[in-house]
Image (tube, rainbow, N blue to C red):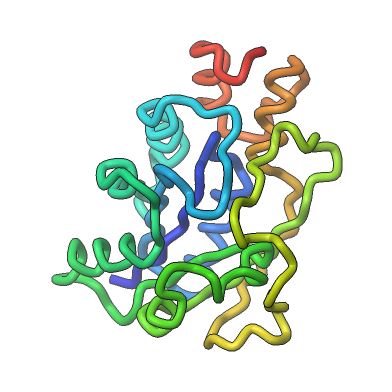
Length: 214
């Protein structure tokens, strides 16, 4: 079984995430994409937090009915800072009896610049097949609703570009979809339409649980 990892806050999971996972499966022949919600990201201050169980519930609702998509709560269960290297090691062990080749590591092109600062970056690049996806910024998202970089991340020092990215990688040709979790949170808070930025079940769950309301 060929397995790829897609990590993120998934606060909430949106159609852009699902489109990307679908493209990775179709373009590179992956049998399964494992969505892993982070517990404490090492490179961001998280705003608008919701309980972990509600992020997991939204993933459950969004992925239902697609046998190629699953989620794993390993980073939440592990606690502490969520390092992708630890998660890859966990998934290698979990799927060791069925895993074919290296785990695919899906990252947005916005993460390329600081990849060399990730925990065990060299080992991570060796352990995985890095898959770089197109990710566009959403112009109307306000700064206050976005997760802000912390520490040495995003400070402009020693940043890589896609052209200078030194690790073996593939580029997935996913559609350029201008959707972000920050945008969904902002529009929900402002009572603006966001129905078609997420799946129908996730949309209903956000409304019923009064998530992101100010």
